[in-house]
Image (cartoon, rainbow, N blue to C red; front, top):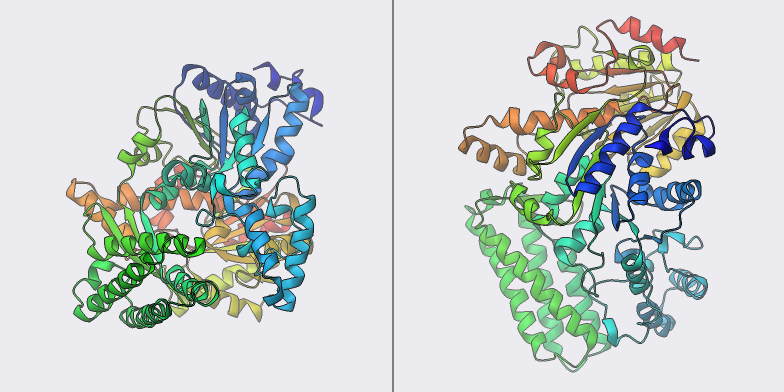
Amino acid sequence: MHEFSDDGALARHVHQYRSRQSQTDMAIEVSQVIASRENLILEAGTGVGKTYAYLIPALLSGKQIVVSTGSKNLQEQLFLKDLPALLSMLDIHPRIALLKGRSNYLCQLRLDKQMQQASHCHEDLLDDLLKINQWAALSTNGDIGNLTSVSEHSAVIPYVVSSKESCTGKKCEFYEACFTRKARVNAMDAKLVVVNHHLFFADRLLKDTGFAELLPDPDVVIFDEAHLVPDICISYFGNHVGSREIDKLLNQIMTIHKQNIRDSIQLEQLSQRALLQLGNWHNEMFNFGATDWRQVLANKSLMMASWQLHKMLAELANNMQHHIGRDEELDIAFERLIALNDKLKDYFECQDPQAAYSIEYGPRFISLRSSPINVAKQCEQLFDKNTSWIFTSATLQVNRQLEHFAKELGLVNSKQVILDSPFDYPNQALFCVPRHLGKVGQNQQSIKRLVEVCVQAINAAQGRTFILFTSHHMLEQVAQMLRSQVAYPLLVQGQASKQSLFNKFRQLGNGVLLGTGSFWEGVDVRGKLLSCVIIDKLPFVSPEDTLYRARAANAERQGLDPFTHISLPQAVISLKQGVGRLIRDEKDRGVLILCDNRIVNRDYGQAFINSLPPMQRTRDLDSALHFLKQIP
């Protein structure tokens, strides 16, 4: 494509632009599948420039496109930075739209109700409410992300944003001015709409709006950060109900009784009884501690408590039915209660052999989640043939193949392409698996050795280090030991929000950041601020994980090895995400230290090595420390 050549549109407008063959190749692949209405799975290594490589052919195609990203941050970067720059360079002017989930938009009706009840509001909350009301009069799109005068954690915000339950649609007095409706209309009229994965699947599968589908039926859907899609599909094709939402709803019903329907004492009594039973069930569940509901089925006491909770919620719903039509808030609460209790019933019965029924324990709540063990069939129907589906990420291949990702999503007939990073990894990066690590585990000896490696690397790198963990327990132990042994600032997950910690890391210039899970991906620290990434061990899923156990059992029934077909591919992609934090620019230099010798001692280690960038490799920690000391 000429736009990517040395005298094309990018060369004329982007400072120090250099044509990259891999970027041109990606743009050609995207252009071809859009024209032929095919599907494409494409891994583009770090530095390929995949954003422009898919946006330019998408914009020039003239077709209606939805671009879905993994996070709201990337979504806003695309819409506010990348797209305006490209439209200017290409001198084209199609309509574009940014669409977020409805809870990101102010609801004028809910705000109006809160203002009417302002006299009952606490002083701190009243200040926030007044600021939001003032902002609402000036806002053109009602996007809460643009509200700077009030903290994003303000207790008022959940009461004034749009929600499916409170939406009255065309009956609403603010229908014409409604920010959510306007956002949807803009999306329907736009040639290119930018969304995030959660909104896309909520809209496709749950129809999670008050206006039927929110998104248009596009010609093309492009998933950036597509490695996240399989897990999101599992979440949306499954079901979820939590004790926190039941508790919140019961308290809301009691408030409605006190404020709007005072003549029915039974409403309050039944709500209180249900709350008491919820508390009893909650405590029994915590004491039992099972993470798989099928273990709970054999416990008579717990099953009695579970069905008693369901029965009490049904009695409350039955009583509420007598008051339907008297109060709009009560009508909405009634529908939510019926839906929640139906979910509970389906979960308690545990009748789908093709689903995993897992229990997650939070600080003061329990989540019950049913997840399909294989979503390929549902995805085949979701990804219909009238649309071109394009999936791209820097981390999709396992052992130089894209087959694992394709099978997970039922996309086996899609075109599959791997484009390697243009970075000079052999000279820019060193990969070290230190000798004498001992057996991987959480014994004191292995933790002590891990801390020794961390201390030496941090000092050699003069801070400027990420340490990524596979468990919170290990993170906490290492953080505690490092505090007394390292002079550089330690930033530990949980001290502040993820974004706040990253901002501080960039600001300090010599920080050491410790994190798990979400800290392995979606972070772009370029240049000298990050010289070393340390990973404690290969990120295999726990064999006790409920979904993994269900998927493993299913694989065994088909005569497949669960480790090879499930555990290993997931771990390879997770490791690639962590490794991807290190080299983000063609001038970056850095060292990756993996404190897990299974990558060199076990046969499966080669699958990891084949999937990683072609860095220099060493077992000698001193060589890695020397490399770090040479980085200015």
